[in-house]
Image (cartoon, rainbow, N blue to C red; front, side):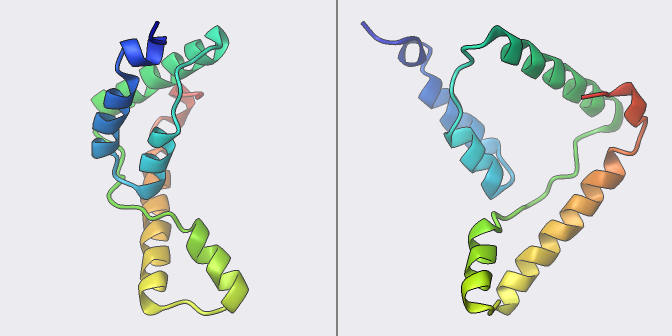
Length: 114
């Protein structure tokens, strides 16, 4: 008998969702998703989703453009201490992205506790 993830074609859902991801970390997170087994975690995630839907409806999309997974880059920099101009550009892009996201979430932040 097929398990519930196979029955609901969870892998196909993850593939479609990964196509919508704007960052490498987002795609990686989606690839590692599993169905909820804990009702409390499911309810918490649904509450967070409800807040994000409200934020998107009220203020528009969160300004996530392109982001990079800097973990390997940072690990390599620790080993060799050398970063290329492209590496520095990726770091600068992510810093600016984080700055834009922080500005976006300063709007009526008290209304959205999650």
